[in-house]
Amino acid sequence: MAISKVLAGDHAADFTLKANDVLTIRQLSGSKDVGTSMIVKGEVLYPGAYGIEEGEKLSTLLKRAGGFRPMAYPEGAVLERVQVRQIAEKSKLQLIQQVETVGQNTKFPVGASATDQAALLASVSAQQDQLLSTLGRQPASG
Image (cartoon, rainbow, N blue to C red; front, side, top):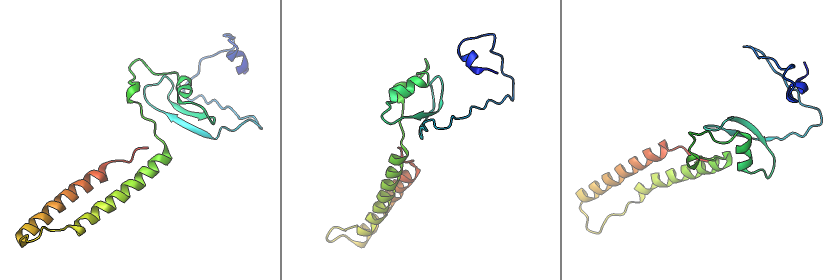
């Protein structure tokens, strides 16, 4: 079948696809391998994986993805980068380690009774547990 005729607009060469049809497009040897790709999800006309070239802008990629659908909320769009997520995850783990050691360094007011010291330790411990729980639930963004 001559797909080039279909792409050129020859409607006589076009036909309807059926369930379980398979289309294979082989790469030409020596063609440029893009190598880097982005995944576009959400309210765009054609979500999916797109090869990108060095220096390509996000606006160009969104145009290739067909642009936003009418119900899209572009102001809520999020760009995530794997490298940035890894850095954020490392920072989060360091913060968790710092919070865990705070309770060990608790200083008591001069002349505080044993009861006051115990209450202060209990308060610090409760706050620490709550903060650690919140930090543990938060995924690192990229």
